[in-house]
Image (tube, rainbow, N blue to C red; front, side, top):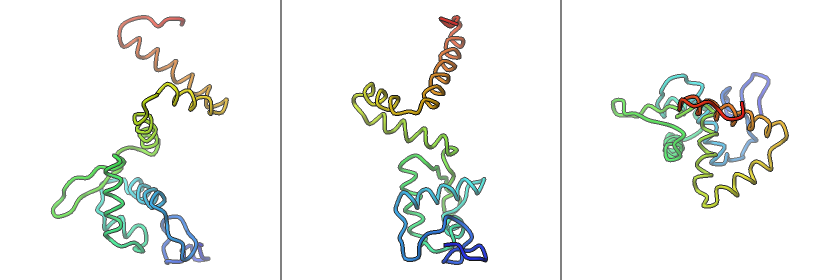
Length: 151
């Protein structure tokens, strides 16, 4: 809960407020860490991430979260001296697209999965998807030097 001075119960002004005594789930922690990395605008250390999140997490917890995000290809790291500098692998939309692709890649019946995905879209999202597919098809056809069919 955010107090009148703009801080949460830990005294931090950073990150989403949460109920006192409630532990954050793994997905929630990953989202908060990714948000901090996106806000940094440049590669940062795990210590910087920990401080940005208000210091309420153990350093080892932050490193564990970053390592899990690395395994999910959501972040990248490079060695800098004795530590690593961490960066998001893509912007939030790119990360969401990567997660969707990874889920699809893990399925043996891609056609059924895609059919069910599309059938669950709102009318607006379905129209958007159709428009994007038409544009992508036209661009791909032009890149190969042929005229698009049906245009």
